[in-house]
Structure formats: structure tokens, C-alpha cells
Amino acid sequence: MTIIVVVAIILLVITGSQLLKIAELRSQSRGELIYEVSEKEGKQQALMLFIGFFVFMGFFAWQMYFWYGLRLPVSASEHGDAIDFLSNLTFLIITPVFIITHGILLWFCYKYAYSSGRKAVFFSHSNKLELIWTTVPSIALTVLILIGLNTWNNTMDPVPAETEHVLIEVTSQQFTWTARYAGADKKLGRSHVTLIEGVNATGVDKEDENSNDDKLVKGEFHLPVGVPVQFVFRSIDVIHSAYMPHFRAQMNCVPGLKTQFNFVPKITTEEMKKITNNEDFNYILLCNKICGAAHYNMQMDIIVESQEDYDTWLAEQNTFAE
Ligand SMILES: [Cu+2]
Image (cartoon, rainbow, N blue to C red; front, side, top):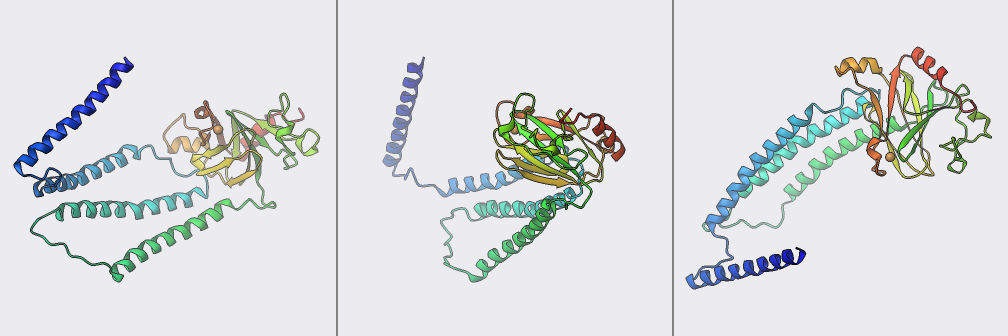
């Protein structure tokens, strides 16, 4: 079978080149230039490009319409509104630029398709043009970058120690998450990969007295609404990424390194069920780095609830010592 396929391909290539040769000889005998694009062909190509603009924009509009309903609901964290604003602003600026530049590009292909009767204007340089196409994008980008840096700094600032907050360490491994609450002393005990042993799957240090009241949970973790949450991320095998889309939060989990992120949840799970009109709605923590075969299934549910409900839930969880 393989031999037949290979032979067939070789024969096809030979046939093609022979046909091309025949066409060449035929044109030569008629005194035509086979590789010269005629004016008519040029116009046809130009018209196709111009029609292509509408097809392309139609596809773009259809994609926008098709995926629109699958966007994330309103941000469930305080800083998320700033990130959404920046994202919307970026789209607001780049969408008209995208449509206008493509429109001009393909219109010019049509308008200035080769015509034997027209002589091209030659000019090597225009300071005015250079100035415009350097200044305008520079200003637009500077504005976006400055707003971006400001948003990034506000988002990434760790929660000050004196502010009342929840401290959670999130440990990733192929293909599961473990959340560890700091417990009554509000301090996380030391942890290290070399201490992983038996049921102590994330390597919490038994010798550290801060570890005793820490609470490790799997499957789902709870957050109180309106209280800053300081996350510390670890990984015990490969790089993972903790992605909490509804809170507009994402941070890499890197072996041998502690990374962090903090946010203030502002909408409870129950409220979000009403907002999204979806009884089954759940906040989720997903892995957003392709980390292996079961990457797609590496997730944890997040329940945002009142301080009262949160306290009740946390009290039910076993401490590390237990
Ligand atoms: Cu992962």
C-alpha cells in the first residue's frame, strides 16, 4: 500500500510538471508570456481581495456574535472591575483600527490593481507620514500600558499584615489541588517538598508549631465575602497555573518558588447563581498550564459565602494535627 501511494505521488508530480511544460510550449508558440500576469488577471485578483474583506469582516462579526454569550459574568472580585475596564478599553481601541486598516489595505489592492495606463508615483520618504504613524500608536500604547501598569500594581500588592484577611496556601500537583488555611494563629506552618511522606502529600512540616492548627482541604474551598484573601501558591511537581476566572485571577504555581495573589470576593455563590440565572453555577479554580494527561480535570470548587457560614464550614474541617 505504502509503495503504491509513493509511486502514485511521484507519478502525479511528473504529470504536473509535464502539463506545465506543455502549457509553456503552447504559450511560446503563440508568442504569449506565460508567467506574466495580465491586466485582466490582476483586476480579478483585486476584486477577489476586495470581496474577501466583506467575507472576512462577516466572519469576524459572526464570531463576535457566536462567542458573546460565553463571556464571563461580571467580576466577582473588587480588582476584577479594573481588569475588565482595561480589557474593554483595549478592545474599544483595537477593533476600529482592525476594521479600518484591513478595509484600507484591501481597498487599495482593488483600487490600485495593475493598470498599463497608470504610472506609479515614486517618493522615498515623508516626514509627515512617519510622524503620524509613529506618534498615534505611541500615544495609544502609552495610555494602555500606563493604565495596565497601574492596574497590575494595585492588583499585585500583597494584603498588608495588619489588615484582617484570610491566608490560604494553594498547592498544585499532577492532577489535584490542596488548599491550606492558616488556622487560628493566622500563620501557615512551614512546608517543603522534601517533607512529603504518606498522607502528608503536600509536605507540611510537623515540627513547626504553626502547622498544628492549619487546615488542609481538597475538592472545594470556601471564602468569606468582602474579606481580602491572600493566596500563596506552590507546586510539588511541574509548573501549574492557578486560574480563578470569575475573580479575574491567575498565577503560576512554580516548583521551588512561592508565588502569590490576593483579591477581595464581592459576590457570594448564591448571588452569582441569580446573576447568571444558573442554579448549577459554581466558582472554580482551574489549572491553566497544560501540565499533563489529566490537566483538563484539575480543578477545585470555590464557595463564596457570608462570614458566618464560612466560620461554620471552617470549624468543621480537621486541623493538620488532627
Ligand atoms: Cu496542572
